Amino acid sequence: MSEHALAKKIPVPIDLKKIFRLETAPAGNGGSAVHLGLALLFLIAVWAFVSLQAGALEHSAFVIAAGVIGGYMAINIGANDVANNVGPAVGSRALTMGGALVIAAVFETAGAVLAGGDVVNTISKGIIDPTLMPDTATFIMAMTGALLAAALWLNLATYFGAPVSTTHAIVGGVLGAGIAATGTAAVNWGTMGKIAASWVISPVLGGVVAALFLAFIKFAILDKDDKIAAAKRWVPVLVAIMASAFSMYLATKGLKRLWTAPASLVAGGGAVVFVATYLLVKASVARRCRTLENRRTAVNSLFIIPLIFSAALLSFAHGANDVANAIGPLAAIVGTASSGGIAGRVEIPAWVMVVGALGIATGLMLFGPRLIRIVGEKITNLNPVRAYCVALSAAITVLIASAMGLPVSSTHIALGGVFGVGFFREFLANYRRGNSLPQSVGAAATPGYEKPQKRKLVRRAHLATIATAWLVTVPMAALLAALLFFLLDAIRQA
Image (cartoon, rainbow, N blue to C red; front, top):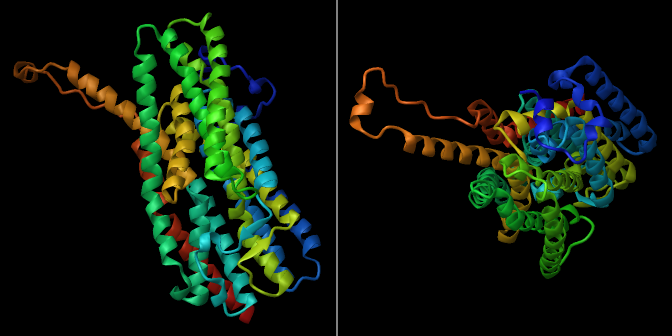
């Protein structure tokens, strides 16, 4: 069934498709010559822009090169990582591709510019000790190598259709360049151990939370004889949970660079949002249910608007947090070139933030659709209810992990949620199918009888590709960064 035919079955209250026709481009166009040419033009513009800003700074050539590499890194973040925020909404047909691209681009940019913060750690996540760097030139080359290595790895992962953590990519880059420049003594191995643990913690937590919510919705609403009555009872609660979780998620993650809210205030604000949302949605759902048929598709339609809001809020929080992956090393290079010393934290010049924000939006628009389709459509079949569970899982899992002091990756959580709902559906399908098969020995011994194959509702090829990419992101980025550092050092000494 075509995308347009499916869209007719589920009413879309905000039909951005009529305004934005970007979704008509084929999924494979991300690698077209036109898109590559536009990306090159953007990087040329970044080069010209940074050349004006670098002025007479010491190591200005490295600053200009780092600015272009930072723009390249931001493009790759937009092409790869943003898919996790809007992919489920597109796959469920709550948003068209064009609508998703516009919403993501606007809110990613807003998050980066408004809530990206004015100060950033120059050494991502405290991976290495900057005081052990022998001189500023070595530090600048290490950060340049780290940034370029992370960008190259993201580009390669996007080419193979594997959504990966951009945070892990830059962490690997800083690790490899830091070891190459100073040796293993500078590495904070405790922090690295926590990051390695997140490879397992993030997707498992995300998958479990998403599967639990899908199980509840299925047994409490979708499997009931009177689905509309059950929806009137539970949908307002579920949407209120989402609104409350996202309000706390934004307070703890999306706005953390501007304001650190006390835990009591975050919890109290979440409770207020829950009550207000419940009362508002309860009245709205009651009105809509008067005209809905007693079918699953009708229940699905009640989750479309929450999905659109979740895509916007996830994009805002992602822009606020992950813009640092593009501009952190760049800000470190600019700060070192300006002051002549190596600082653990530096102020982010406005022009550096602009490069990061516009780069993410450019990468999303030019190359984002391919990964968005993989996340939303290729791994498993999503509808609005399942996509809702994935989006809610992203917010709740981050809150749980933060409360427990566990490091998690939003990318891994979102993908874990997609796999979680897929494997849960697969389990139910095979369990029910197995119970409906002939149980007698005679049936199995009947000539011509063949035991039915188990249904597979999750594409294993994508699971293998993504899991492999996750496991090798840090070591591969580290290896690339080390090689690039040695190359830059050789060029400097030549």
